[in-house]
Length: 224
Image (cartoon, rainbow, N blue to C red; front, side):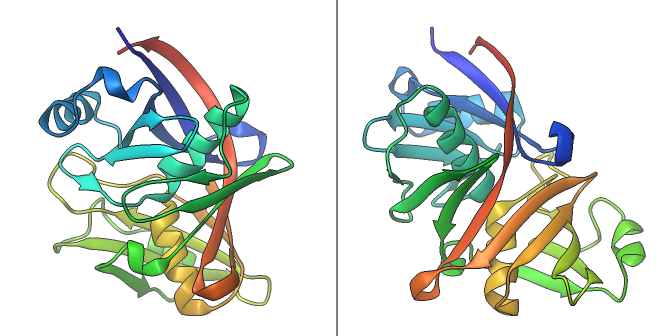
């Protein structure tokens, strides 16, 4: 039986908060397609990753209801875990395309493209307090990333993320893909506080890419 590694990705200083992630390193133990979707639905994390080839970085990402071509917090978390096991490649390979990854101090980084996370509404609010006051989820359909400046000069942003897919994830604690889209729109480096207190760092990268980084901690390892 394969093991499940449960991580928290984009933790705040001191390792608090972060978005839970399930990683199955022996991805081939679970058949692609409906079997993986069923596992992701049973686990109930915002995303679960199946690593098909650790050496070449081939990964498969599922929410409780759908397969994703790209997602930020799963790739940051998987990169960190593979590094911890000394098997991390220079590129991760989700269906969307090759994703460079590296470590810089306590932060694990990836580089992706905003077009890999389509149909996400970036909605600005007048203050962080307005973002804090939103219900989970706000009325409406489709992915909503609510944001407000905390300190515009310093690039500090308050955000909350709402997938609104009807699959039990009322609010996403920390989402790298939406952070990439927001950074691409604003065209500047950001320090993002999302959810209860998760922290995401972003900056524009080369050739219209965006780099996103964060802290990761291992919560537990258990049989799948």
